[in-house]
Every structure is written in structure tokens, then in C-alpha cells.
Length: 229
Image 1 (cartoon, rainbow, N blue to C red):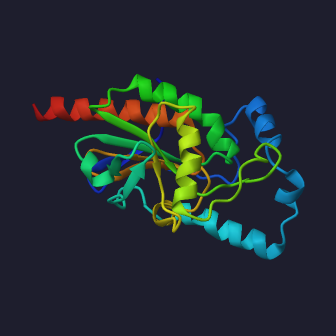
Image 2 (image 1 turned 120 degrees about the vertical axis):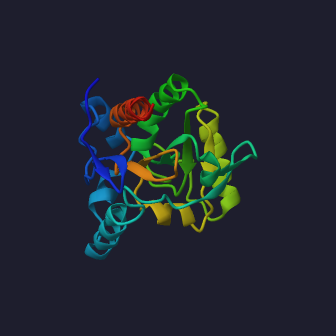
């Protein structure tokens, strides 16, 4: 098992955050696939003011929901009408990624997260998506998908995602309260420990890092049990 950097913070095991403005961990094929889904001219043709706003939003991943601290609670409706409340998952490890139908990096991860969802026992690890804002609505790969202007419209798009994955999908309301609490980036991923503390976050969801951290976290728990026993 490849080891991901970890440390002790506030008496608990946490893992080094992964920050980057570019998804460098994706393969060339994945990057090429992402490029074919977006309007490149639109992406690089933004005004200085638009770029400044985007950078400010992306930078919130560094300040919101800090590693080693209690994760902001949320209560969200899923595409099947159930309620996901983070505080209800105490005693389990919670793992989630922010997604959207028009977010190519998130879409490249969907199938990989399905495998992760199947790999871990739900009694120990709860894995789910949080559907948030559209990122490239109406662009090359998503001509039929428009920006959502209400929570019900967002739910409709989220149900489309649910049709292609077995991973549960919860929906952030149109006011984006959850996204704001966790950092305004397209497909960030988080791991919350059994006591509700953030132990890992990544600006770009990378299934390899998520899996490494999960394995190490579970091993650390077993070692603690052994030492205490």
C-alpha cells in the first residue's frame, strides 16, 4: 500500500491536504476527455475580473472546513427522497465528493467512486456525492444541460447522475450552503472521521489518494485498538 503523508493534529490522525489549481494527477486520456467537453476559448477568454473572482472562490478550499477540526454539519435530501445528515454518521467514516453533470473532472471520477463504494463496508465507511452547481452548462459536451436556477432543477440534474451510478447522491440547495462551508471548488473530496472531524481534503478528487487515506485511517484505528487493549 502506498503511504500518504499523515500527522497528528489535536490528538487525531490527519492527512496532508492536496491543493492544486490543475488536476495534474489525471491521465493524459482523462485530460483530453475533459478538454473535449468544455469550450476552451470560453475558459481562457475570461476577463481579469472573472479570473479574480474564480481564483478567490477556488482559494476558499484552503480556509473552509480545515483539516483537524469539526466538519460543518449539513442536512441534504438525496435523489431517492432520503435525508443525509453528516452528524448522523458519527461512528462511521464519511467520504464525499462535490459533483455536477457538467463538471468533467467529477464525471471522470464517477465510475471509480462506484468501485470505492463497493469496496468498503457501509457499516464502516459511508460514501456519497453532493450535487452542487453546474460548471460547464451548455458547453461542448453538455449542450442539452442548462444552468440550474432552483433546487428542484438541481434535483432533476442530480437524478440524471443517479441513473449512471450506484453511489448515493445528495443535493446541495440552490443557495449553495454546503459548498460555501466546504470551499467553492468544482469537485473537491473530503474524508470525515468517526467523531466528525475533517481528516483529509483534496481540491481535485483523486480516487487513488482517497483510497490510500482510507486504508491508512482504518489501519491506524486498528493499531489504536490494539494499543488500548
